[in-house]
Image (cartoon, rainbow, N blue to C red; front, side, top):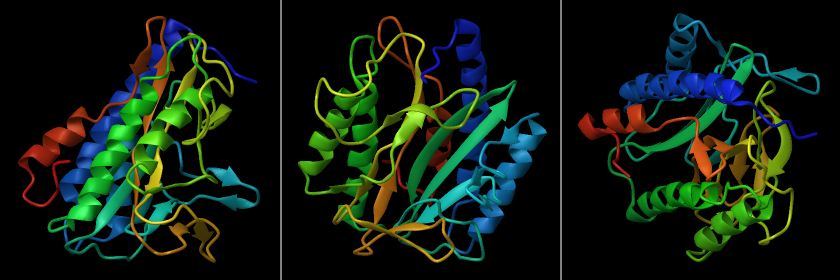
Length: 268
């Protein structure tokens, strides 16, 4: 069932989106060669708790498994759901940081992929184009449009460069639960799928592979990689369907301020 949000509910989600954007920025300040992914997760946990909120992902349950971290941190060929740990970042890596904030009964969810230092040109282009596809998709979040319009916008753009669009993982509704209806695939046909209505809140999150679209799951049951082990990029915003069109409830602005002054992170 799809739940439409009131202006007051949208305000709560947007407030959480602000906390999340600033949390991403605090994490971004620490991204550099020699840092472990677990150290980044600890930064996020402390920032979210210091702001009176709870990490949406922490203790999130899928079947019998509970997720034990505040962030999903996915490096290079990991598409999503990478587990923070002792992996040490190095020059040339790309790293996707996906996080959520829960406060006042509502969630916000967003992701950003960073390049560290000397990243190959084809991977830089993957990051740029995946980010561009996010905005092409969310521009379709208007009353009367359909979920398939979002997916078509993402798919048609990214596949024009020969990239693989992941099928098994999709965007989703966001609100009182981290994952609500409807599902929001990054592929589809115009005019198909659930109709978008004012007050709907959805997470749009292109997951785009440099190579083929097929994925595999590690033995840990969480980490999802590209089958061909080529890099993958992931960008995400929480978006409301407004009367006149999309309202972005999360923010990349604090992240991009950090990137502007960084000597390590790529400005994409």
